[in-house]
Image 1 (spheres, rainbow, N blue to C red):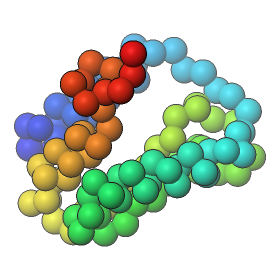
Image 2: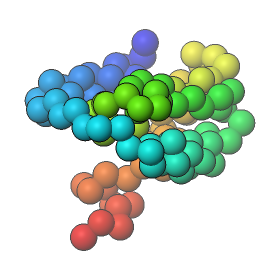
Image 3: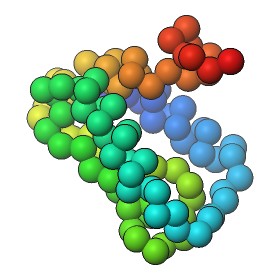
Length: 103
């Protein structure tokens, strides 16, 4: 794993450990929310994405879960990883990023 991928993974792990875990009842809107996220990721990834899958507990109908939509983006080669990370990060602005439209 290269340094940028490691930093993304480490950041996600630190956030996950710091935040309290909340389990909620199944929300029938989760599949639709995933579809919107998938479409956004597919648009950003274009030809780099081999497939984009809904994974984790929100992907299981009827199962209580953390209200976080998890997805896996499959790419053809590890060589595509830096470009894939750049494209996904650019498509998902955070409140601190200059691209954000949040107040």
